[in-house]
Amino acid sequence: MHKSFDLFFVSSNNHKYQEAKKILDSFGINLGFLKSDLEEIQSNSLHDIAIVKARDAFSKFKKPIIIEDDGLFVDSLDGFPGPYSSYVFKTIGNKGIINLIKNNRKAKFLSIVTYCDKTLLESFDGKQNGTISKTQRGKGWGYDPIFIPNNFKKTFAELNNKNELSHRYKALKKFSKWYLNK
Image 1 (cartoon, rainbow, N blue to C red):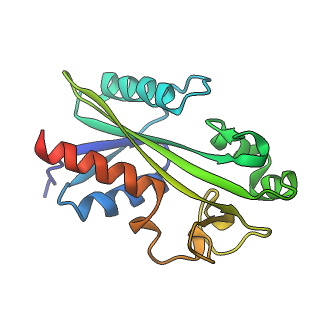
Image 2 (cartoon, rainbow, N blue to C red):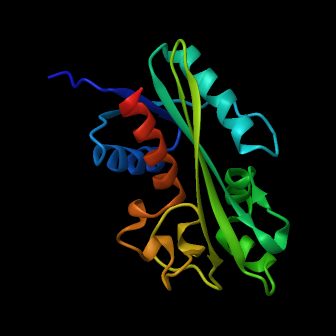
């Protein structure tokens, strides 16, 4: 039986889709997945990167889509890796980030969710402040094993309720409110 989706999440990252699907399910939005590598410009702006990715995704699939781009911004590293988080993760990983940080462990995750259809292009942001742990903890993906959200002692990878407080949740919640009322 063919499933009908409200819109599609376009990404090469199935982990991001699974999180987005769970979150949007809770708002009554049925999200499909279209796996694709998207054009990713080099920019210091997550917003600019997300806009280009969303336009690329819509041009490929001609369906209402959302994309999500995010970054880990470490205060003591002047916001590095920021919009280069995916590349940095692939090259030096969590251990590399931990090794770069000396004393100030403050960091934040930023997420940009961008919706695109044939007439609309809208972006929504979410932020979660926290700190970088001194060791990897838990079995999560990406930077989850080293990011401890404010007011918690566990990393995202150790939390059962990450999808209720993450940067991605906050951006998708804003998107959901807009989408359901547009």
